[in-house]
Structures are given as C-alpha cells and as structure tokens.
Length: 316
Image (tube, rainbow, N blue to C red; front, side, top):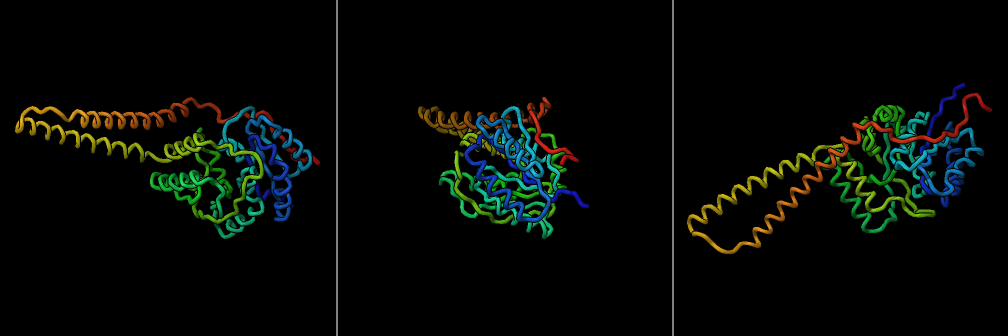
C-alpha cells in the first residue's frame, strides 16, 4: 500500500480568528475532492487572538490530515512558511494565505500545471481588489525587481504557489534569515510557469502588511538576490566624481578668464545638498547589505517552535 503524501498545503496564520472557520469550511472539502493523499500544515506565527486555540480544535477534528506548528512568538510570514516546508512531507507543496483572498478551490489549477511537467507554478491574481496606491506600487516594484534580480514574477504579492519536492528540499538546505520564498524557488526551478487564479475581497479582518512592511519586504528582496544596487551606485559615484572634476576645471578656467565673481551661492548650495543626499543614500544602501551580513553571521535561529500538533505514525 502506497502511503506517500501527494500534497502538502502550507498556511501561515497570524491573528486570523475571524476567518479561520470559513477557511476550514472551504479548504478541507476542496482538498477532499482531489482524491489524493494530502496534509495541511498550519503555522501559528505568534497570534495574540484565538487563532492557536482554533487550530488546535481543528487538529482534534481532523488529525489524519492536519498538522499545526506553534511558534512561541511572531517571526514573520516567510519564516513561518519555511517552518511549514521543513514539516511538510508531500511530493508537492502549495502555499496559501489564511485570509481567503485566494480561493482554495483553485489549488487544483496549480496541480494541473504541475502535471504538465512544471516544477514551480506561480500565480497571478485575476482581479486585484487592492487600493490604487498599492496596485501601482506593486507594479513599480515588480519592474524594478525584475531589472535588478532577473527574476520574472508577474505578481510577487500572491503567495498561492506550488513547488515540487526537489525545490522544497533545496530551500530547506538554505540557512539565510531573510529571504523571499517565491524568488528563491524561481532560482532553483527548471521549468517554472505562472497561471491566473481568483482573488476575492478579504473575508474578515485586516491585512497584516503595512506600508513599512511592504517596503521592508522589497528591501529584503532586492538586497537578498542581487548586488546590482551596489554596482549601480558605484557607477553613479564615478559619474558624479567625473562631473565634479569637470565642474572644478570649468570654474577654474572661468576664474582665470573672467576673474573673481560674486554669486552662484544658491547653485553651490544645491550641488552640496545633492551630493550630501547622494552620499547618505549610498551609506544607507551599504548599511542594508552590512546589516544583512551582521544578522547572518550571528547564526540565530530563524524561529522558535513551542509545540507541534501532529498524529504520530502508527496512531489510529
């Protein structure tokens, strides 16, 4: 008898008590209809509401297909997903947000693409119900990210994605603290693809991503997968230095030909402020990379697990 698990669904949870029951009511029937062996790995990322208790109750109801990883604090969505990867056993792994903005019924679409030979299936939200500023910011960051990292993802904000076991095993070998999982998987994939999936309004609660969180995430993406920003800034520094040298030569010749002049104070102030701002930006950019190095060399654990709710092998 083949007891291999065909599919693992990894779902990070953070303060989602208002939506979890609706998620359970849709997710389990959708997976049961696939007629394959599956497991659902929930990771409670330090929720301060009743999410952990609701996950424990759900485990008690469906222990045959449910596993719950409980963090002892909040470590972030991507670290929660990494923990889910390490505790998953399926031949294929699908990640899904708990907010029901991506319908669980579309999991079958991802699996159908994997049946065609793809080892990584990304997703594009059919109709995004986000605010205009968030939509425009996302498009701008997608274009910038593609230029910097050469990683092609039409919709980096959609976490409903499917991965082969080979990619998951490779990701599990990585020990970096800050990463962006879809981009990491794209680098390891041999036959990636993308499909369009549904996108619904959030069932309940509020988004856990603030503007600062989104900016922080994109900084991690840029600095974690490319040194192009440093190279661009080096080229910009050389261009500014060359321009400054030409300006000095011009001012010297002007003084020799026309003699001393009064004026140009505001121009000099503008140039000074521009160069100071440029230097501060460069220091900040360099600090991003140095900060990443500092956090990596400390080798602190990416997360701390309080408990794992799972049925042991051989248990009825």
